[in-house]
Length: 287
Image (tube, rainbow, N blue to C red):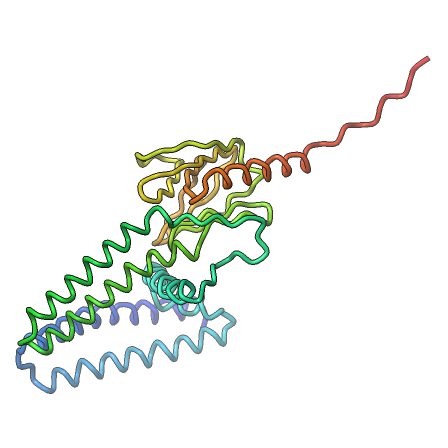
């Protein structure tokens, strides 16, 4: 299957998916609301979904046989933004497991690890408690509608897990220094490797307000940042949905901002010393 042959078929599959998935949601809502839907309509909708999944599976196998990787083949079938959202959800849920197991992500062989989730913990736990109260209240109010009660309960429980997973991602993904770079992170959606040789200046700077500006990345925790990096060359920051922007100022926070500042400052000094041109030989004396 060549690129020319692949294009029209993939467009057809995506078109069917864009039409079938919303229709499936509407059908589910009608059934949930007690609307009588003819059996033939329900059976037809399920056949369409089964056929769509089967066709996409066949195309995926053919793409793999043409040498595409698993992710590349999947990206041909599913829009990139959808893949990114799914990947973000999976990283969040994996963070819960790492949090319980106390296994931080990406810290193997690091010269410095700097947690940054402490100052948001109270807020996140409070938010999770509010969600729990809302779950209990909705469960009581919907007790006489078993189907609706079950659906809302699942959504409410997932909301509580989502809030805890956001905090878990921050706990298990600290800032990491090593390998000639500072890996600045925030939850599961920001992971920016900043090469040390691009850092022109590092300073302690407590900020509690941050305006969105071009060329600036603010990784605030509890609405504050405490360390600012000024870069002499921009780095690329990939957003949650894949948008890329270039920044020359990175502001971040750590539970121990002094330790982060000193470690980055010293690492930058060592990097500069290594890359500085060595002095040439003394000139020969002249008569």
